Length: 182
Image (cartoon, rainbow, N blue to C red; front, side, top):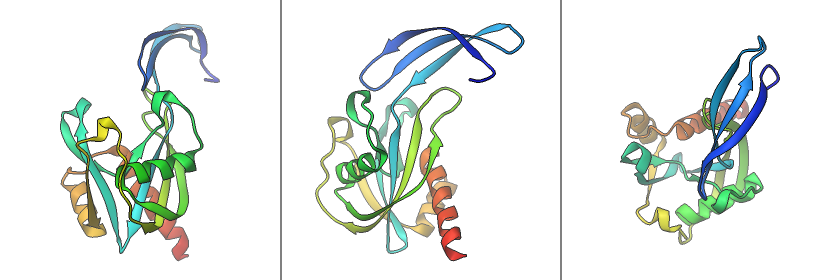
């Protein structure tokens, strides 16, 4: 906030997954405003890739009121911080049972920079070994499926895959592959 100066801050709500704070700030011209910020821990998103396709997970997403397909992703319980690579390995194994022989960092994105300070650390998982998932209680309705790359693109075009982090991570994968092809 180099151009904006925080004058005050107060937490207006919190639970084990997030906190919402209200900041009063001063603009460069001296006028003041209020901003609501959702404080959430960073999360990891993993693209499990093999045989020119992806392993996806689907679960009910309460805020949007529907089931949604996406790449495995998540954060540590109780807003804890952790090393992104360790978190990626944990989420992949927890949600899919897969273990990655190779984990390649593709980049870091802002998850929702207009409302939150959360980042998503994106990884490509290859050399996959199957295992049993170990899902959290909130993930008890989670399903898993393998889709070809063509099917993935079709699901994005049709709006079946509408998770912004999943679509953005796919873009990072394409840029990574483009760099390898040079």
